[in-house]
Image (cartoon, rainbow, N blue to C red; front, side, top):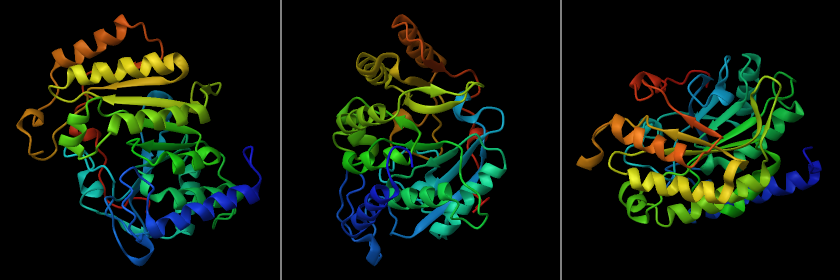
Length: 318
């Protein structure tokens, strides 16, 4: 049971579920009783809700591969950035209520479709449910009687409460971790998230402690951390500072994904980011990374800022 016996894991899961009655799963620590139908910053009660479960081909190459990543898009989000590409489900709350048993079955169905991994998108507010559903699937306690054997990816804004993040060590194999802002001014302005960099950086330290880099024979990631830095329009210095701080701390123990795919889906309310990132801005960001001689670095090619790369939230696979 992944370096932990079943009894110890069960105890962690039980403790995580108790947190839902005074929720502190994310760094906002609302203390809302979600088991009684209350909703905090995430906008969700304790009931599971998801909007899509399908093969996804637009993650990093060693995550999606040729056959795709098995992405499960959860409804709700505790960060709610004004520029979110998944606005309909993160802030709008679109999705369908599902049970823990159904979620475990979804994992197996994605594995049967030859997904390289299970990719949990925006799972922070469902940490207990994720832990229990993955446990069930790995134990074969699903409708198919089949065990989940592919890696589990935790795709996050990195704004967790670090205590509950530490509980995921036996559940998660790979972390896709945003490092959205360096400046507290920007995180407050666009996400109303105080101390974002401090929180996210500390959480990434915990992720790296848990998961050393490991790849299989075909080059697919089996374990590790990918730090994603999304360049925002006019925020080039901020992105460079975030990358520099991360590389100084983690070196080549992680992968860095430098993203220039920003698209203003709706009016953000801030004129300066109601546009795409320019080629000059993204080029300068990449030049900065090259000057640092980062080896484990992914850089996007043209077309990544096309709206067609955003999946439809149509309840497929749910």
